[in-house]
Amino acid sequence: MSRTTSERDQILKKVQEDAALCPFAKRVVPASCYDTIVTVTVGAGEEKKTFQVYKGLISFHSSYFARAFNGSFSEAEKETVELPEDEVDVFDIFYYWINSGRLRGPLRLDVPQVPLPWALLINLWIFGDARGRPAFKNAVIDALTRKSNDESCFPGPGTINRVYKNTLDASLLRKWTVLSALQVLSLKVLTQRIETYPPEFAGDWTKALSANVIDDGKTVFNAVLKKGLEAIKVGCQFYDHTTPEEHAHWTQT
Image (tube, rainbow, N blue to C red; front, side):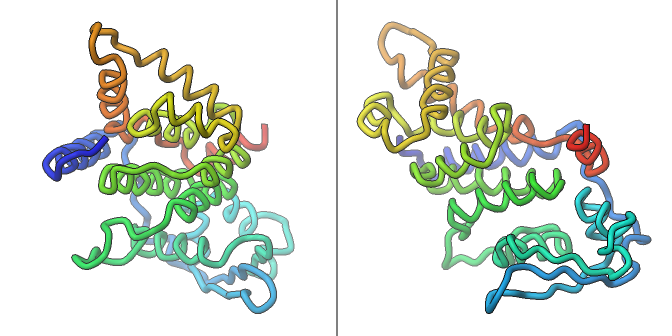
C-alpha cells in the first residue's frame, strides 16, 4: 500500500509525539558516569577493533557491562572486555549511540532518512537485547518504525527468519515485525511465499490478522491495514521499559 508524503509525515509526527509522551521517561546520564576509561575489544582476526569508553557510561547503559566492569570477574581487574563473537559494525553504532544519543550522524538531504539496512537494524536490536541495553533497543525500534514509514516497505524473509531465530515468543521485536507486516503483506503474498517465512511468523501474522479485522462488508483487508497503521504509530508499545538493572535481575532469575 502506497502512502503520500503527507501521510508519512503524519505518521512520523505521531510516533514522535507518542515517544515524547511515553510514561517511562528517558534517563539522564549523570556526570559521574564520565570517569575511568576502559577498553572493549570487538571481533576477531583482521576485523578486530578496540574501543575506549568511560566505564560509568557503558555501565549506565548496559547491565552486561555493569557486571563485567564492576564485579569480581577478571574483566573488572583488567578493565578490558573482549567480545570476539560480536560484529564490529554493530558495536560501532552502539558506541556512537552511547556518546551522542543517535544511531547515526546528522541526516543528509541526499540519502534516505534511515540509511541503515533492515538486517543491520535487526542485528542492533538483537545485540541490545543480549547485552542488556533497553534504551538502545528502543532507539532501534524508533529507527525501524521510521524506515518502514518513510520507505513504505517491510523486511524480507531472510531478515524475518533472523528475528525469529534470535528472539523468544514474547519478544517486542516479534510484535513489531508482525504488526508492521499488516501494512504491506497480504494473505495472498504470505500464502505464495509461506515456505520462505518462519512457521511461527506465519502463525503470529494470522492471529494478528484475525485480531485486527474490521468487517465493514466491503473492504475488510483495507480496514485491517488501516488498523495496522494505527498500531504501528505508537512506538511506545514496542519499547522495553526496564532499566539495565531490572534487565540484569530478570535475566538472572
